[in-house]
Image (cartoon, rainbow, N blue to C red; front, side, top):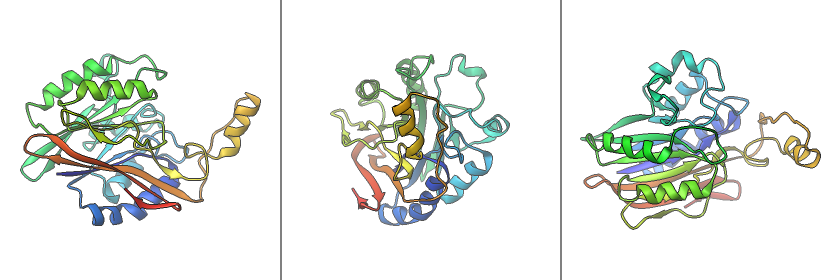
Length: 268
């Protein structure tokens, strides 16, 4: 089983890049499932709308994961409960009353792939423990399938690595999102879990984390509030990874980064 994971899609440049390259990536790697993090897909880089959710699916995504910007577009409350192919972080306090769901399944031939979305706590806010939440959801998923992937949307590398080790042998893969910079540490851990600290982002290439660099530079230079903006045009990048899983055991065989930009076409 091959699973394609695309890192945070940021604004219009990210959407354009995804629509342009996803068919070509699929043609090359032939994944059975494609997961896309869409929590930055809105034009301002914060949240997602129903229109963008449907565009991501039409572009080739089988499931959309989210993160700390899940609720930034007000209309998300109007459609998230009916969005069967979207998961938001599962570890909100009193999760049973939070709109949406934190885990979903993708049907692949005669088996299923469980996808779990989790939110970090280090430098990220006061949510429930992602470690215990992961453990509970993995036990639930294992009643259905051994093929399980976690999108861990977190800031701290240490928290991501720790959860990766905690989940080693329990899930097929744990891929980090949120920091928008692709890390050079993709590997299969000793007990069979594919791990990558951050898949990177899909969006504007010549800025800072997908945003125009000028306002961010001014923020650092002056320490005054600035409005961060996603440019409407410019060079873009696509980041992600391709994971191969033994569907019979749920153990990963390999994980390889995907980086597409003007300097690195199809670097794997």
